[in-house]
Image (tube, rainbow, N blue to C red; front, side, top):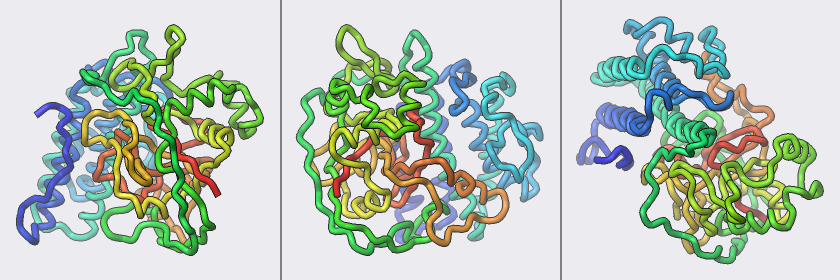
Length: 428
């Protein structure tokens, strides 16, 4: 098995009614093993470095995801801590749990070493196997499931952070060996728009399976008729935007976006480089020729909004996106396939709704009507970030397949570009 045979976790047994505790234990083992495999190509030096305040070292991701299980499941049950100092070092943002290493200074922690962090992971896993060995009550099962979803988020973040780190290196190292026969260099097929009738539609989690608290309560939204592009915007279309002066035309940009574009000197998506009149893109496979019919990726909300204006369209509302996603079954690239690269769209109505790249929407990140965060530290998970952020939908090529669903709400600040973010157009 290679480090990236990351197929989704199957049921714990072939029985019609498998033991729920065994299913949860099997899922725990799968998620933890996936994280270990994702760290396998990294050197100790790779795992220490922090390329910017928004990113975290891989070593920190590996420790923090273990800290979550230790803090919320093992310590309350009387298990001894691996190292009491880790409660300070690997807390992320939980104010209720005390002080923590400043986020921007996580890369300064040369100790504990990478091997010690892996020892910490094994220590936590041994404790969790004891917790999961017996009958698991509903509260414990819910916390374990939250911890697994949390770790899956950090699997994606670890890859996006490593990509940003490697992009700062003049050597342009590849995290993963590039494919021997890259495909998809053809011209972009014309986009069509699917008409959706709107009306009063239910939005939010239906409560079947795990969902984060920000996906609740399920509620009705009134949508007018609208149309949604059948695929994501491609690199070829983005090149046309650039060639038409899209990065030089203030009339296309929101005021804050234009200020940001000027301050950051944006003239192309993040990780694009001009070489001899052509463009190449840096990704987890290293520097590669630009695939014209693949989705554009690593653009901010501001850039996505400017492109939509240039195209005579707009970004969809998150409710419009979710309503449309219920009628689409075709998926793009996800983490489990192990390629970590967005791919050209299949010829299907509303292709790529799940996978390939996160899709910016025109909706700000706010709570649904009636939203209330949980009490205690766990309640800090989502609710306190509901300001100055925009919603993205659909997952990306580095999102685990078991982690994504049509009601999932991702959120980032509008200037951020290091995530696998792109766009789909909408029309009234």
